[in-house]
Length: 452
Image 1 (tube, rainbow, N blue to C red):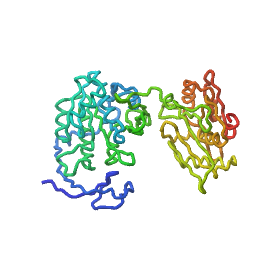
Image 2: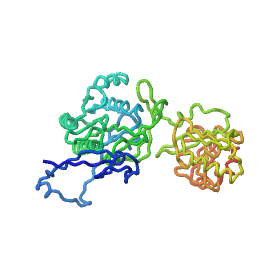
Image 3: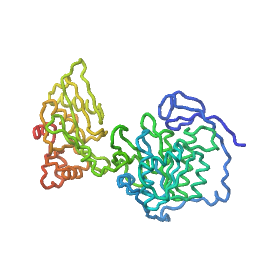
Image 4: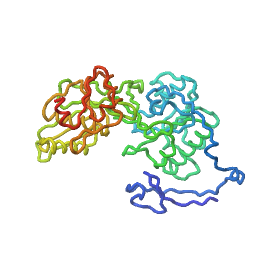
């Protein structure tokens, strides 16, 4: 008989302990330990398998080119690094109601049109509920099959028997194994289910998409080892009350990380936004002070965003500092630079900084745009609508270089901007686009003299 004993697991990071602890030694979170029963089974590996196992020299390993196939969404293919890799394990996380299931059901629709065999396994919805959502999206081919089950052993048997090319698991927190006594969604169950799906994906060449719930902090619920085991981790971001959604890749073994795809939620489902810069700049006010356009990078993709600032006289003893879409501490730092280097009496004013469109950015290239927007609002002077700027601002007011300056300028030229304020150290390495004026500045004083 297998021996069973009680082990305490941290629900945040998966740290194990023989006794209950108030604070986790691994992630330093409080009241995250839960008790679970763990059975220790005797190893069943035969002596024949043990004798056959041996390491392989690096020179003898034969490389093979992975044949990717398209998901039907160029934005999703871009985030995945060029398409879906057979045998990969992809984790998709996001807030409730953000559109994870809708996106994957639309991927099933696109793959079905390519005659790819897809199995959609749901542990949260019935067949009729999935059918209602599918009717809203559109027509589906016969290569999509549905299965509602949460038992891991039954799901394993169905996948091996049906042999699909792509499997959707919605969601990983609802799956459970009868060999583990803990409840579904616990650390042990999530770890066991992910390990089982990883063996299925690698052993049979099946691409498996796992839908993961997120905690109130915005990270995937369950142990951190869940993200370490999968090949790709995608986060679906955005406000449920807004129309756009951002799919961000934070881990990818087959491509670059920090790539994003932009989608717009409509009645028929999610629609790709082919030109995110134009979408983010739509509705920009004309002739308004405190508004400037910045060019930022999301992975390898340049995006134009409007940075807004409102500076007004404070009615209270302590002025307010509010930032939406960027770091409030960074805004306070930049305002301290303006007070020290420019003698601007911002300590008597309230300051509100906003990135229009609901985007969240913390790139250093945003500094110059925030500074110019604050100065524009403080002096009530307008910045030319065809001017764009980017650059990092230091504590002495200097403007430092940022990466990928050429790509930023090309995107600004494509969107019709005629003037670009950028760090002077970057201007010598950039080919000037026709009809565009590049202004290199060493510090904030030069930037203010040129555009205000």
